[in-house]
Image (cartoon, rainbow over all chains, first blue to last red; front, side, top):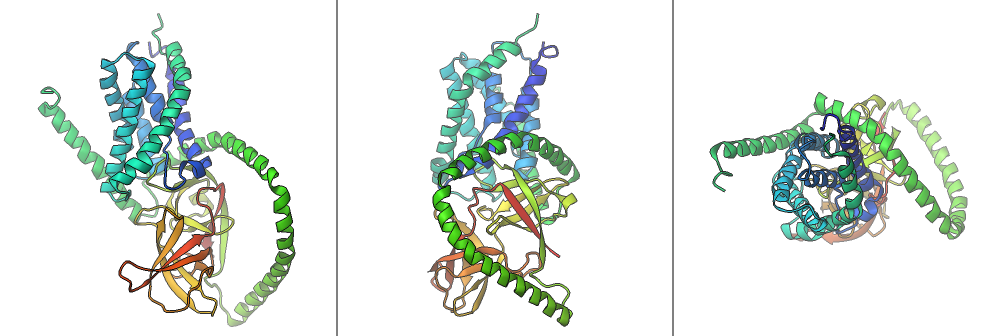
Length: 179
Length: 282
């Protein structure tokens, strides 16, 4: 059970770590990640959550993903963006979309990477739309697809390939039902 | 599909959408009006910022290690050119000191207490950067308790980089000059031409493709040349006078051909910041 499992501590700790790594990596490698015209956005938080949700299908529901997604989304809004109200809804939406998709596919590597691809694309698209409505993003749609969406997808798929095996192993080991 | 668009779910989705945009619009408006964010936000940011310090410490350690290796590689050639500059610099420094002394004496005689060039700085470390392609924002490790207020200008070693956009108790956010946000980039600046004329204006934008700042709507017919130096003008009272911004890269016409548009090569690389200082007028 979740209550007994070690995942109860591991999940939030790694979630926070991923949250800080997103910011720190963007800061340390900013000359690489944000060199004109491309900008790559690091989404380690999403990677950690999405892989958990995909693995969830095999086990019973043990971690309250939607709740954690909303909390980390709120932190994302207030700490990084300074604009409340976007990621606090987007992250739970991503959890929901991942659940819908992973219901219909077996959690193999290939299916997982496709689901993750859709998640990141959706997240960036909605982020772009929302920020252009309130006047923060000013790029055209074509520029967004070419210079933000494509590089971001590339970066995060590399993350996925690198971290798929270790993260899956962690979920496999600790998120099981304890008999 | 029928079940998906059931009445209840539709209502919930609409309420969430309205809440989402309401919150966003509200927080943007609040950010522009108030000098500090709401208490809950501040509290959250302070706690998160504290934890972030712990996490970012090893990462910046690794980065500085890598940097020192790469710096070691070209230190020999750099040393040669720097040696030449140092001998000149000593002269400039001495002259600078005498001028500063003279200046303060003259000010005393004039009974001029404070002028726009008097400012002190608070040094802060960069702990994070917004992982977003729409905002060029960094988080620094000093806040209200160290005397930082909203809208103070932020400098790196070589020049102006942005302004403080949000202040918490122990950390604050800095909006870089490379941010395309419409509410940023409004620094009052001036160009000193080689003939001694002074042209005033504001920074109106940032050209991402060349990494240049834009100073628009310049109607003065002073002879502005490439490499003329640009500093803040101190107008508006929030920014001290004489912070270095950059050099003129190109003088162009604006879209209607009526006014000049001046492209500025910034003094700093906005993508390579680890320590910054916040300037406050005394």
